[in-house]
Length: 320
Image (tube, rainbow, N blue to C red; front, side, top):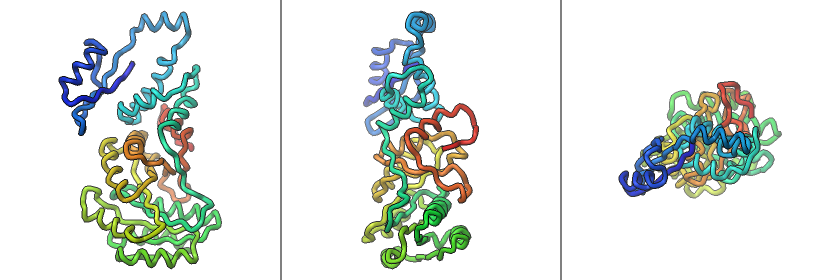
């Protein structure tokens, strides 16, 4: 199947373009309203007899071999507009080279910026919507840094949610770290500066927020305001609606987030929301969480591992 996405001010205008290009044989795959008007994605089945002749004369054509990639991307919840862009970026490939070809296409379209391991005097603030896994991510980052021999300071500003402090404190005690609790946003700047003198890495866990509530976002903004050298990292669960993720990603982008960290890859094979949120808002994809166990840590995401994840055909265990 060949797919193409049309953007037009209205449905009738989009349909006129579709009929001009495809005639009456096109199948509508999706229809979304956008700020520009409407976005309609259509597909056209290839002629089977024509394809058989093509195969006999020239072997399997590249566009047919790309069908596996197209199907995998659509199954992963990648919006059709991004699927089309990825397919356009595919290099000419030979039979069985789908993973390598997809890797090259992803590397052209996405940025990858894994969390630093050896750099010092860095402060990271984990932010995101409620339930996205920020506290577990904080613990995993602390374990990795501790194992690498770094001096780690762990700060929590999530002091109101029931059990939040106890959950993170259970991990920091095992690591022989003191959990620093900050109850007011305006105190964070001084606490971070004090930690810099004795720490290689500073991790800041924050309360889950509703990105559509200005009061919640203002709280995070107050924490970051006038505090130098803190990088906020957006934590987002895999498996969300792609367009919801795009909107949420745009809201957090205004806070200064540049990296997107995906979680719950063990519970979802729908990674399209992470790709769409990153591509739409200019995020760099960083590490991902594929396990609820702190000891198993985070996995650095690269174009190759992302291609392998997207092309998984079964619910087998993910190995990055």
